[in-house]
Image 1 (tube, helix red, strand yellow):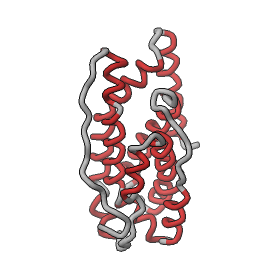
Image 2: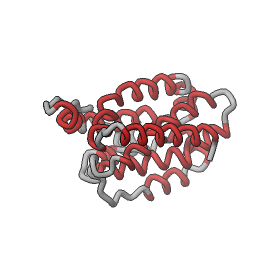
Image 3: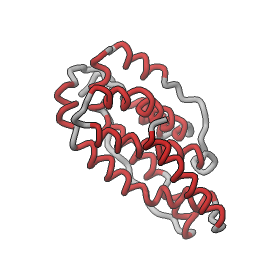
Image 4: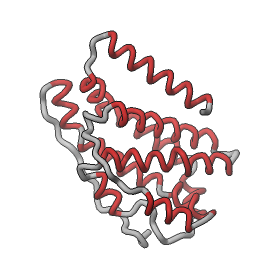
Amino acid sequence: MPLRRVSLVLLLALLFGGACSSGVTRSTRCGTFVQNFPLRLKQLKTSFIKIKEYYEEKDQVETALLDASVLVEIQSPVGCHAMSEVLRFYIETVLPAADEASEEFKIPIGSIGDIFYELKSELLYCNDYFSCKEPFQLKEIVDTYNKMQDRGLYKAMSELELFFNYIEEYMASKKHDSTVALRGKPSGSSTLGRSPHRGER
């Protein structure tokens, strides 16, 4: 495991330990994570803007990886598991390949990877809070990615912004629950426009 990942795991462990020792409940911690996630989303977008033009210019494939069906899954009862699986795809496959292929963009790619890893860890810890249910099949996305060969990397990286939108949609849908958990008051959630279907750009 890379040093940055080890440091992040240790940080999450310390946060978890601190939460337990101070009597903070799991639902409170998870609710706080949801409420504070817009800051992480802003950091993701700030990092991506540094690499967006490069990967979008390199992406010459019309077929989409993250089509509208993925958003439907994220909005469904299996949304947490769907989100976790797509994060795993980026953490284990896409971002390491992008990092290895580019010396220029290692810092923004690493920053995106760290936040994805943190989000995946929190989804695992907050399994009950997010009502994670299986199954979500990642196989179709992985198969399409592999069929694209070298071009798959550029496609997956160019669709990061779309994935950010999916994450934003999912986290916004959980804001009501987090507000109730933290203050006992409901809050509104936002919705996004339609996403591209497979084969659209």
